[in-house]
Image (cartoon, rainbow, N blue to C red; front, side, top):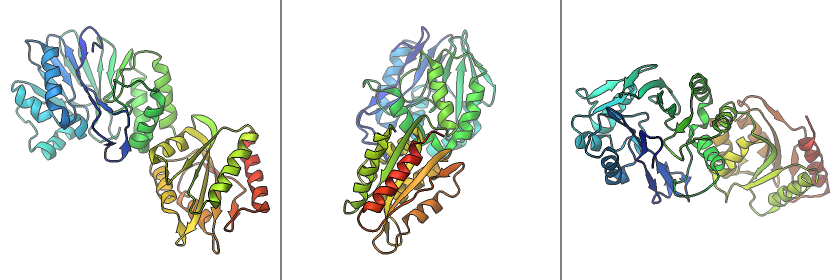
Length: 385
C-alpha cells in the first residue's frame, strides 16, 4: 500500500490471535504496522509480531526492490513490534538499528545484544537525514512504555506515532474507528494520560498532515477529530453525556432493579448503556465508563465484600485514573449489605468524582420503597448540572 510517493506500508494483518496481549478480544483481528521510507537511504519503521516474520521480510524485499535497507527505526519494544529485530539484522548485515537508549537496554533483555557495532542512539530532537526526507525523533516515555519514541518526517509531514492513535482490528476489515480505538486506548494506554498530554503538546508544534500508527489505519483526513479525541481521553474528560449502568446479579433481583432504573432513565430522556459484568467484554465496559459522564454501580454483598466481577471492574477503572464523573450505587444484600460502602471505598482515591445523594439499598428483592429510590436516583442523574 502506498502511503505517500516515498512511503510504503509493509505491515501485516493478524487473524490468528484470539486475545491480544492475552486479554483483549479481537474478533476482527489486529494489524502490526511497519513502513518503508524510500530515499537516498531506506529506513524501515518498526518490525512486526513473531508470527509474521517471512511475510514482513518479503514485504520489505518487494518495497526495496534491488536495494537493501539502511536503517531499522525501533520506536517501541513491545514484542508485537520488536520481535523481528534480530531477523532483520541477520537479513541485512550492513543495516543500522535506530532507537532510544532505553530501547537498546531492552534489546539486550530480549535478544542478548544491544547491537553496539550497528546502532544509532537517538533522543529528543535528534535528526536523521535519508536524503530528501529528514526524520526528527521525539521522546514519548510512558506512552505507554518508557523507551518509546515517535518520529516526524518533515518532507511528507508524517508523524509515525508508535502505539498512539492505534486501534484493534486488522486493516482488511471495515469498522468504526472510534469504537475500537477507544477500547484500545483505555485498555492499554489509559493509565498514562499525563504522558499522552505531553506528547500532544509536542505534536501541536508540528505541521502534521498524516499519522502512521503501529496499529490500525493510516490517518489522512480530519486529523483534528483524532487529536481532539486523544485530548479528551488523556484528560480523563467524558466524551458524551450519558449513564452507564454496570452490574452483577446472582439470582436476578439486582438485574430487575437495573432494568427498572434503565427504563426510568430512558423515560426521562437520558442516554443509557447497560453492562452485565459477568457476561460482557470487560474492556468494552471499561470503555463505556470512560466514554460517558455518569456511572451506576450495582452489585450484591458477597463474602462480606462485593461480587468478584464488580471488584475487577472497579479495579480496571481506578488503575486507569477514572475521574471527573458522577457515580451512584445500587446495593443488594439479604442480611448485612455492605456493597455500597466497599465500592465507594475502592473509589476514594479517584479524583473529582461526585457521588449521587441517593443510594438504592435492596434487601433481597426489590420493593416499592426501592422503586421510589430508583425514581429519585434517576431524577438526580438526569438533572441538568
